[in-house]
Image (cartoon, rainbow, N blue to C red; front, top):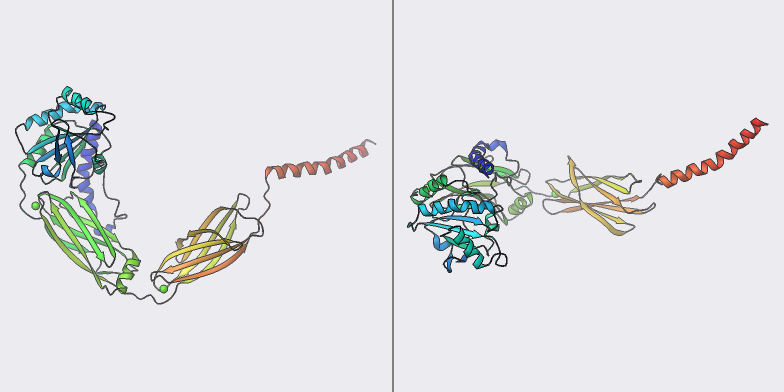
Length: 429
Ligand SMILES: [Ca+2]
Ligand SMILES: [Ca+2]
Protein backbone atom coordinates (compact mmCIF):
# COMPACT_ATOMS: atom_id res chain seq x y z
CA UNK A 1 0.00 0.00 0.00
CA UNK A 2 2.86 2.33 0.91
CA UNK A 3 4.61 1.42 -2.34
CA UNK A 4 1.45 2.28 -4.30
CA UNK A 5 1.21 5.64 -2.59
CA UNK A 6 4.79 6.45 -3.38
CA UNK A 7 4.18 5.50 -7.03
CA UNK A 8 1.13 7.77 -7.15
CA UNK A 9 3.02 10.65 -5.56
CA UNK A 10 5.88 10.18 -8.03
CA UNK A 11 3.32 10.11 -10.85
CA UNK A 12 1.70 13.32 -9.60
CA UNK A 13 5.08 15.00 -9.42
CA UNK A 14 6.32 13.96 -12.84
CA UNK A 15 3.07 14.46 -14.78
CA UNK A 16 3.34 18.29 -14.96
CA UNK A 17 7.03 17.89 -15.78
CA UNK A 18 6.29 15.55 -18.70
CA UNK A 19 3.57 17.87 -19.96
CA UNK A 20 5.84 20.88 -19.74
CA UNK A 21 8.50 19.12 -21.77
CA UNK A 22 6.23 18.47 -24.76
CA UNK A 23 7.49 20.76 -27.49
CA UNK A 24 5.49 21.98 -30.44
CA UNK A 25 8.02 20.62 -32.94
CA UNK A 26 8.30 17.43 -30.92
CA UNK A 27 5.16 16.16 -32.68
CA UNK A 28 3.14 14.34 -30.05
CA UNK A 29 3.12 10.92 -31.74
CA UNK A 30 -0.29 9.85 -30.56
CA UNK A 31 -2.54 12.64 -29.30
CA UNK A 32 -4.78 10.17 -27.43
CA UNK A 33 -1.81 8.73 -25.58
CA UNK A 34 -2.04 11.14 -22.67
CA UNK A 35 -0.24 10.69 -19.40
CA UNK A 36 -2.88 8.91 -17.32
CA UNK A 37 -1.12 7.10 -14.53
CA UNK A 38 -3.76 6.91 -11.83
CA UNK A 39 -6.51 4.40 -12.45
CA UNK A 40 -9.06 6.85 -11.08
CA UNK A 41 -10.62 9.54 -13.30
CA UNK A 42 -8.06 12.38 -13.41
CA UNK A 43 -8.06 15.30 -11.01
CA UNK A 44 -10.09 18.16 -12.42
CA UNK A 45 -12.75 15.89 -13.92
CA UNK A 46 -16.36 16.64 -12.94
CA UNK A 47 -18.27 14.62 -10.33
CA UNK A 48 -21.11 12.31 -11.23
CA UNK A 49 -24.53 13.29 -9.91
CA UNK A 50 -26.84 10.71 -8.35
CA UNK A 51 -29.72 10.29 -5.93
CA UNK A 52 -29.08 7.65 -3.23
CA UNK A 53 -30.31 6.76 0.22
CA UNK A 54 -27.96 7.22 3.17
CA UNK A 55 -28.13 3.87 4.96
CA UNK A 56 -27.37 5.50 8.33
CA UNK A 57 -30.15 8.12 8.26
CA UNK A 58 -32.53 6.55 5.69
CA UNK A 59 -32.48 9.93 3.96
CA UNK A 60 -32.06 10.48 0.21
CA UNK A 61 -29.35 12.81 -1.08
CA UNK A 62 -28.32 13.98 -4.52
CA UNK A 63 -24.64 14.64 -5.01
CA UNK A 64 -25.40 18.00 -6.64
CA UNK A 65 -27.25 19.12 -3.48
CA UNK A 66 -23.86 18.92 -1.68
CA UNK A 67 -22.37 21.65 -3.94
CA UNK A 68 -20.62 24.25 -1.80
CA UNK A 69 -19.27 21.53 0.54
CA UNK A 70 -15.92 19.78 0.44
CA UNK A 71 -16.64 16.07 0.02
CA UNK A 72 -14.44 13.06 0.78
CA UNK A 73 -15.73 9.90 -0.89
CA UNK A 74 -14.39 6.55 0.32
CA UNK A 75 -15.05 3.43 -1.76
CA UNK A 76 -15.08 0.25 0.35
CA UNK A 77 -16.38 -3.29 0.78
CA UNK A 78 -17.02 -5.04 4.11
CA UNK A 79 -14.65 -7.91 3.22
CA UNK A 80 -11.68 -5.70 2.33
CA UNK A 81 -9.09 -5.69 5.12
CA UNK A 82 -7.27 -2.48 4.01
CA UNK A 83 -10.71 -0.77 4.02
CA UNK A 84 -11.22 -1.84 7.64
CA UNK A 85 -7.71 -0.63 8.53
CA UNK A 86 -8.57 2.76 6.95
CA UNK A 87 -11.74 3.27 9.03
CA UNK A 88 -10.00 4.80 12.12
CA UNK A 89 -8.18 7.24 9.77
CA UNK A 90 -11.46 8.28 8.16
CA UNK A 91 -12.95 8.63 11.64
CA UNK A 92 -10.03 10.90 12.61
CA UNK A 93 -10.65 13.11 9.55
CA UNK A 94 -14.37 13.25 10.24
CA UNK A 95 -13.82 14.11 13.92
CA UNK A 96 -11.45 16.90 12.86
CA UNK A 97 -14.38 18.60 11.06
CA UNK A 98 -17.16 17.75 13.50
CA UNK A 99 -19.62 20.62 13.57
CA UNK A 100 -18.37 21.97 10.23
CA UNK A 101 -21.33 21.75 7.86
CA UNK A 102 -19.07 22.57 4.89
CA UNK A 103 -17.40 19.16 5.14
CA UNK A 104 -19.00 15.82 4.20
CA UNK A 105 -17.47 12.36 4.49
CA UNK A 106 -19.22 9.50 2.76
CA UNK A 107 -18.41 5.83 2.32
CA UNK A 108 -19.64 4.07 -0.79
CA UNK A 109 -20.23 0.33 -0.41
CA UNK A 110 -19.56 -1.59 -3.60
CA UNK A 111 -21.42 -4.76 -2.60
CA UNK A 112 -24.87 -5.74 -3.79
CA UNK A 113 -27.82 -5.99 -1.42
CA UNK A 114 -27.83 -9.80 -1.85
CA UNK A 115 -24.20 -9.95 -0.67
CA UNK A 116 -24.50 -7.49 2.20
CA UNK A 117 -27.98 -6.49 3.31
CA UNK A 118 -28.76 -3.30 5.22
CA UNK A 119 -28.55 -4.95 8.67
CA UNK A 120 -25.07 -6.35 7.94
CA UNK A 121 -23.99 -2.94 6.67
CA UNK A 122 -25.38 -1.16 9.75
CA UNK A 123 -23.59 -3.67 12.03
CA UNK A 124 -20.37 -3.10 10.12
CA UNK A 125 -20.78 0.69 10.49
CA UNK A 126 -21.38 0.32 14.22
CA UNK A 127 -18.35 -2.01 14.69
CA UNK A 128 -16.00 0.44 12.98
CA UNK A 129 -17.54 3.66 14.35
CA UNK A 130 -18.58 4.99 10.96
CA UNK A 131 -20.58 8.02 12.10
CA UNK A 132 -20.86 9.45 8.58
CA UNK A 133 -22.95 8.91 5.46
CA UNK A 134 -22.95 5.46 3.83
CA UNK A 135 -24.39 4.85 0.38
CA UNK A 136 -24.60 1.68 -1.66
CA UNK A 137 -23.28 2.10 -5.22
CA UNK A 138 -26.38 1.14 -7.20
CA UNK A 139 -25.61 3.74 -9.90
CA UNK A 140 -22.26 2.44 -11.20
CA UNK A 141 -20.32 5.27 -9.59
CA UNK A 142 -17.22 3.03 -9.33
CA UNK A 143 -17.37 2.56 -13.08
CA UNK A 144 -17.70 6.31 -13.71
CA UNK A 145 -14.70 7.11 -11.50
CA UNK A 146 -12.82 4.03 -12.73
CA UNK A 147 -12.36 2.69 -9.20
CA UNK A 148 -10.74 -0.77 -9.30
CA UNK A 149 -9.04 -1.01 -5.91
CA UNK A 150 -10.32 -0.63 -2.33
CA UNK A 151 -10.19 1.54 -0.48
CA UNK A 152 -10.10 4.39 -3.00
CA UNK A 153 -10.54 7.90 -1.70
CA UNK A 154 -11.64 10.87 -3.80
CA UNK A 155 -11.56 14.45 -2.55
CA UNK A 156 -13.99 16.87 -4.25
CA UNK A 157 -13.80 20.65 -4.39
CA UNK A 158 -16.82 22.76 -3.35
CA UNK A 159 -17.45 23.17 -7.08
CA UNK A 160 -17.74 19.35 -7.37
CA UNK A 161 -14.63 18.53 -9.32
CA UNK A 162 -12.09 15.83 -8.41
CA UNK A 163 -9.30 17.64 -6.57
CA UNK A 164 -7.31 14.63 -5.47
CA UNK A 165 -7.59 10.85 -5.26
CA UNK A 166 -5.59 8.06 -3.70
CA UNK A 167 -5.70 4.30 -3.56
CA UNK A 168 -5.39 3.10 0.01
CA UNK A 169 -5.64 5.53 2.91
CA UNK A 170 -2.24 5.67 4.50
CA UNK A 171 -2.32 8.87 6.51
CA UNK A 172 -4.51 11.78 7.48
CA UNK A 173 -2.36 14.93 7.67
CA UNK A 174 -1.93 15.46 3.91
CA UNK A 175 -5.69 14.98 3.48
CA UNK A 176 -6.55 17.38 6.30
CA UNK A 177 -4.19 19.96 4.74
CA UNK A 178 -5.92 19.66 1.38
CA UNK A 179 -9.41 19.76 2.92
CA UNK A 180 -8.40 22.92 4.86
CA UNK A 181 -7.18 24.46 1.57
CA UNK A 182 -10.44 23.61 -0.17
CA UNK A 183 -12.57 24.89 2.74
CA UNK A 184 -10.82 28.27 2.76
CA UNK A 185 -10.40 28.27 -1.01
CA UNK A 186 -10.80 31.55 -2.85
CA UNK A 187 -10.13 32.18 -6.53
CA UNK A 188 -11.84 35.17 -8.04
CA UNK A 189 -9.77 35.57 -11.20
CA UNK A 190 -10.62 34.00 -14.54
CA UNK A 191 -7.90 31.95 -16.25
CA UNK A 192 -5.80 33.97 -18.68
CA UNK A 193 -5.18 32.61 -22.17
CA UNK A 194 -1.94 34.44 -22.92
CA UNK A 195 -1.35 33.01 -26.34
CA UNK A 196 -2.60 30.39 -28.82
CA UNK A 197 -0.25 29.33 -31.58
CA UNK A 198 -0.27 26.75 -34.33
CA UNK A 199 2.66 25.33 -36.24
CA UNK A 200 1.03 26.09 -39.63
CA UNK A 201 -1.08 28.91 -41.03
CA UNK A 202 -3.16 26.54 -43.16
CA UNK A 203 -3.81 22.88 -43.58
CA UNK A 204 -5.04 20.77 -46.45
CA UNK A 205 -5.83 17.22 -47.49
CA UNK A 206 -2.14 16.74 -48.23
CA UNK A 207 -0.99 18.15 -44.90
CA UNK A 208 -3.60 17.24 -42.33
CA UNK A 209 -1.56 17.32 -39.09
CA UNK A 210 -1.04 20.40 -37.06
CA UNK A 211 -0.26 21.29 -33.51
CA UNK A 212 -1.91 23.81 -31.22
CA UNK A 213 0.05 25.41 -28.46
CA UNK A 214 -1.64 27.46 -25.75
CA UNK A 215 -0.10 29.33 -22.88
CA UNK A 216 -2.60 29.58 -20.07
CA UNK A 217 -2.19 30.75 -16.51
CA UNK A 218 -4.40 30.59 -13.47
CA UNK A 219 -3.90 30.01 -9.77
CA UNK A 220 -6.22 26.95 -9.75
CA UNK A 221 -6.38 25.79 -13.36
CA UNK A 222 -8.64 22.73 -13.61
CA UNK A 223 -9.32 22.06 -17.28
CA UNK A 224 -8.16 23.14 -20.70
CA UNK A 225 -10.10 21.99 -23.74
CA UNK A 226 -9.73 22.39 -27.46
CA UNK A 227 -12.55 22.15 -29.99
CA UNK A 228 -12.34 22.24 -33.75
CA UNK A 229 -15.28 22.24 -36.11
CA UNK A 230 -15.11 22.08 -39.88
CA UNK A 231 -18.30 21.29 -41.78
CA UNK A 232 -19.53 17.95 -40.41
CA UNK A 233 -16.16 17.21 -38.85
CA UNK A 234 -15.35 17.93 -35.24
CA UNK A 235 -12.55 17.09 -32.85
CA UNK A 236 -11.98 17.93 -29.21
CA UNK A 237 -9.57 17.19 -26.41
CA UNK A 238 -9.65 17.66 -22.65
CA UNK A 239 -6.68 18.22 -20.41
CA UNK A 240 -7.68 17.71 -16.79
CA UNK A 241 -5.90 19.62 -14.06
CA UNK A 242 -3.13 20.78 -16.38
CA UNK A 243 -0.17 22.60 -15.07
CA UNK A 244 0.03 26.31 -15.81
CA UNK A 245 2.85 25.53 -18.22
CA UNK A 246 2.41 25.61 -21.97
CA UNK A 247 -0.13 23.06 -23.15
CA UNK A 248 0.14 21.31 -26.45
CA UNK A 249 -2.12 19.24 -28.65
CA UNK A 250 -1.66 17.90 -32.15
CA UNK A 251 -4.71 17.46 -34.33
CA UNK A 252 -4.79 14.86 -37.07
CA UNK A 253 -7.78 15.77 -39.22
CA UNK A 254 -9.33 13.25 -41.60
CA UNK A 255 -8.32 14.41 -45.13
CA UNK A 256 -11.75 13.39 -46.49
CA UNK A 257 -13.36 15.74 -43.95
CA UNK A 258 -11.07 18.55 -45.12
CA UNK A 259 -11.89 17.84 -48.77
CA UNK A 260 -15.63 17.72 -48.05
CA UNK A 261 -15.42 21.00 -46.12
CA UNK A 262 -13.76 22.71 -49.09
CA UNK A 263 -16.57 21.41 -51.31
CA UNK A 264 -19.03 23.27 -49.08
CA UNK A 265 -17.05 26.47 -49.55
CA UNK A 266 -15.35 26.40 -46.16
CA UNK A 267 -12.11 28.35 -46.44
CA UNK A 268 -11.06 28.43 -42.80
CA UNK A 269 -11.73 26.78 -39.48
CA UNK A 270 -11.71 27.97 -35.89
CA UNK A 271 -10.07 26.22 -32.98
CA UNK A 272 -11.73 27.18 -29.72
CA UNK A 273 -9.71 26.99 -26.55
CA UNK A 274 -11.47 26.96 -23.20
CA UNK A 275 -9.76 27.22 -19.82
CA UNK A 276 -11.61 26.59 -16.56
CA UNK A 277 -10.50 26.82 -12.93
CA UNK A 278 -11.57 25.09 -9.71
CA UNK A 279 -13.70 28.11 -8.81
CA UNK A 280 -15.84 27.44 -11.89
CA UNK A 281 -14.55 30.51 -13.76
CA UNK A 282 -13.76 30.11 -17.44
CA UNK A 283 -12.14 31.95 -20.34
CA UNK A 284 -12.40 31.12 -24.03
CA UNK A 285 -10.33 32.24 -26.98
CA UNK A 286 -9.81 31.01 -30.50
CA UNK A 287 -7.50 30.94 -33.47
CA UNK A 288 -8.49 30.69 -37.13
CA UNK A 289 -6.67 28.43 -39.58
CA UNK A 290 -7.04 28.55 -43.36
CA UNK A 291 -8.17 25.47 -45.22
CA UNK A 292 -6.48 24.98 -48.60
CA UNK A 293 -8.96 24.31 -51.37
CA UNK A 294 -7.32 21.70 -53.59
CA UNK A 295 -9.27 20.32 -56.54
CA UNK A 296 -9.37 16.61 -57.23
CA UNK A 297 -10.07 16.30 -60.97
CA UNK A 298 -9.13 12.76 -62.00
CA UNK A 299 -10.00 9.20 -61.06
CA UNK A 300 -7.22 7.21 -59.41
CA UNK A 301 -4.85 5.18 -61.58
CA UNK A 302 -4.87 1.51 -60.49
CA UNK A 303 -2.58 -1.24 -61.78
CA UNK A 304 -2.22 -4.77 -60.36
CA UNK A 305 1.51 -5.38 -60.68
CA UNK A 306 1.84 -8.84 -59.16
CA UNK A 307 -0.23 -11.80 -57.92
CA UNK A 308 2.06 -14.16 -56.04
CA UNK A 309 1.14 -17.71 -55.09
CA UNK A 310 3.35 -18.57 -52.10
CA UNK A 311 4.18 -21.92 -50.46
CA UNK A 312 1.60 -24.28 -51.89
CA UNK A 313 2.75 -27.10 -49.56
CA UNK A 314 1.21 -25.56 -46.43
CA UNK A 315 -2.04 -24.19 -47.81
CA UNK A 316 -2.13 -21.36 -50.26
CA UNK A 317 -0.88 -17.93 -49.38
CA UNK A 318 -1.62 -15.21 -51.87
CA UNK A 319 0.08 -11.85 -52.12
CA UNK A 320 -1.39 -9.12 -54.27
CA UNK A 321 0.63 -6.03 -55.08
CA UNK A 322 -0.79 -2.98 -56.84
CA UNK A 323 0.27 0.52 -57.77
CA UNK A 324 -2.31 3.19 -57.02
CA UNK A 325 -1.83 6.88 -57.67
CA UNK A 326 -4.08 9.91 -57.80
CA UNK A 327 -3.85 13.55 -58.81
CA UNK A 328 -4.62 14.51 -55.20
CA UNK A 329 -4.82 11.72 -52.62
CA UNK A 330 -5.55 7.99 -52.45
CA UNK A 331 -7.57 7.29 -49.32
CA UNK A 332 -8.56 3.66 -49.77
CA UNK A 333 -7.23 0.56 -51.55
CA UNK A 334 -9.42 -2.51 -51.28
CA UNK A 335 -9.30 -5.91 -52.94
CA UNK A 336 -11.89 -8.54 -53.72
CA UNK A 337 -11.16 -12.13 -54.77
CA UNK A 338 -13.50 -14.35 -56.80
CA UNK A 339 -12.96 -18.11 -57.17
CA UNK A 340 -14.25 -19.42 -60.50
CA UNK A 341 -16.52 -16.37 -60.72
CA UNK A 342 -17.98 -16.55 -57.20
CA UNK A 343 -17.17 -14.05 -54.43
CA UNK A 344 -14.45 -15.54 -52.23
CA UNK A 345 -12.35 -13.18 -50.06
CA UNK A 346 -11.87 -9.43 -49.57
CA UNK A 347 -9.62 -7.07 -47.67
CA UNK A 348 -8.02 -3.65 -47.38
CA UNK A 349 -4.56 -3.26 -48.89
CA UNK A 350 -1.81 -1.66 -46.83
CA UNK A 351 0.43 1.06 -48.22
CA UNK A 352 3.90 -0.48 -48.46
CA UNK A 353 6.04 2.31 -49.83
CA UNK A 354 5.53 5.10 -52.31
CA UNK A 355 2.45 4.18 -54.33
CA UNK A 356 2.70 0.42 -53.79
CA UNK A 357 -0.10 -1.28 -51.90
CA UNK A 358 -0.14 -4.94 -50.90
CA UNK A 359 -2.16 -7.55 -49.04
CA UNK A 360 -1.65 -11.21 -48.15
CA UNK A 361 -4.38 -13.83 -47.86
CA UNK A 362 -3.37 -16.92 -45.88
CA UNK A 363 -4.57 -20.54 -46.12
CA UNK A 364 -6.88 -20.14 -49.07
CA UNK A 365 -8.87 -23.24 -49.94
CA UNK A 366 -8.05 -23.69 -53.61
CA UNK A 367 -7.11 -26.53 -55.94
CA UNK A 368 -5.05 -26.73 -59.09
CA UNK A 369 -6.82 -25.14 -62.04
CA UNK A 370 -9.06 -22.83 -60.00
CA UNK A 371 -9.35 -19.37 -61.53
CA UNK A 372 -8.88 -16.59 -58.99
CA UNK A 373 -10.10 -13.20 -60.17
CA UNK A 374 -8.47 -10.26 -58.36
CA UNK A 375 -10.27 -6.88 -58.30
CA UNK A 376 -8.34 -3.97 -56.82
CA UNK A 377 -10.28 -0.74 -56.17
CA UNK A 378 -8.53 2.55 -55.54
CA UNK A 379 -10.52 5.42 -54.03
CA UNK A 380 -9.44 9.04 -53.91
CA UNK A 381 -10.23 11.81 -51.44
CA UNK A 382 -13.16 12.93 -53.61
CA UNK A 383 -14.73 9.46 -53.49
CA UNK A 384 -13.87 8.65 -57.13
CA UNK A 385 -12.98 4.98 -57.67
CA UNK A 386 -11.13 2.92 -60.28
CA UNK A 387 -11.03 -0.89 -60.49
CA UNK A 388 -8.27 -3.01 -62.02
CA UNK A 389 -8.92 -6.69 -62.57
CA UNK A 390 -6.70 -9.72 -63.24
CA UNK A 391 -7.05 -13.50 -63.35
CA UNK A 392 -4.70 -16.03 -61.82
CA UNK A 393 -4.88 -19.79 -62.42
CA UNK A 394 -3.81 -21.94 -59.45
CA UNK A 395 -0.73 -24.00 -60.28
CA UNK A 396 -0.62 -26.11 -57.12
CA UNK A 397 2.48 -28.27 -56.66
CA UNK A 398 2.00 -31.74 -55.16
CA UNK A 399 3.52 -31.42 -51.75
CA UNK A 400 6.03 -33.99 -50.49
CA UNK A 401 4.29 -35.11 -47.35
CA UNK A 402 5.60 -38.00 -45.19
CA UNK A 403 3.26 -40.75 -46.56
CA UNK A 404 4.36 -39.86 -50.11
CA UNK A 405 8.05 -39.96 -49.09
CA UNK A 406 7.58 -43.38 -47.39
CA UNK A 407 5.66 -44.74 -50.38
CA UNK A 408 8.47 -43.54 -52.69
CA UNK A 409 11.13 -45.34 -50.55
CA UNK A 410 8.99 -48.51 -50.48
CA UNK A 411 8.54 -48.48 -54.27
CA UNK A 412 12.24 -47.80 -54.79
CA UNK A 413 13.15 -50.78 -52.60
CA UNK A 414 10.77 -53.03 -54.50
CA UNK A 415 12.70 -52.24 -57.68
CA UNK A 416 16.27 -51.95 -56.30
CA UNK A 417 16.31 -55.01 -53.95
CA UNK A 418 15.54 -57.65 -56.60
CA UNK A 419 18.28 -56.11 -58.83
CA UNK A 420 20.75 -56.39 -55.93
CA UNK A 421 19.74 -60.00 -55.31
CA UNK A 422 20.38 -60.79 -58.95
CA UNK A 423 23.80 -59.12 -58.71
CA UNK A 424 24.67 -61.08 -55.52
CA UNK A 425 23.69 -64.37 -57.17
CA UNK A 426 25.85 -63.55 -60.17
CA UNK A 427 28.89 -62.92 -57.89
CA UNK A 428 28.47 -66.18 -55.92
CA UNK A 429 28.28 -68.29 -59.03
CA1 LIG B 1 -8.77 31.53 -11.33
CA1 LIG C 1 -8.41 12.02 -58.08
